[in-house]
Image (cartoon, rainbow, N blue to C red):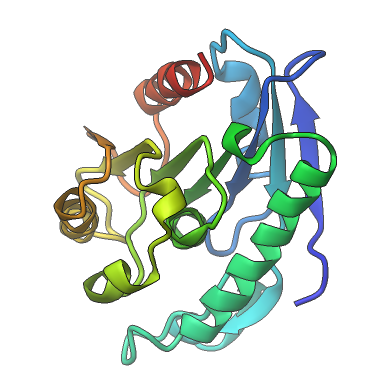
Length: 217
């Protein structure tokens, strides 16, 4: 996968760290950018919003749209190669931040839905220590084999998981299964559930800000 496009914004000068935030299926880099001004942050942070490549999506009848991987309801692991490619592309952004002087332990990977799958895939396997992993309305890809792809560097990295109780796209049970897999491997998971569907709500935005303030304290 070639270098991906991204938007970037900073909440002020002298940023403390970087949050790389991935959108969901069919959205784009502009999706979460409007949330940044709503975050009540104690530190100035840089936010990077990458654009997923356009690809045909099987679950949507082969329609082309931005997606980090294909979803085929008949073959749950069909997107594995796409996931690996997208993970590598986001890792290139992590390395770019490091090259620009941001220590890896000041970089947080965040993602919504499909984007959260990539954020967790990269965050749990990354050989460098990261600041945090934010997984919104998402799940762990191939959770039964997650232990095989973990990196020791991020066993203590804080993980934020938030999910809607009435999510029609990714049932909350799937997120709970992912959470339990992580807890079983002794990860630190901060879990939140909200009275919402497949979206982000004001309370979740407040909780995200509080979590970011904790990990960047």
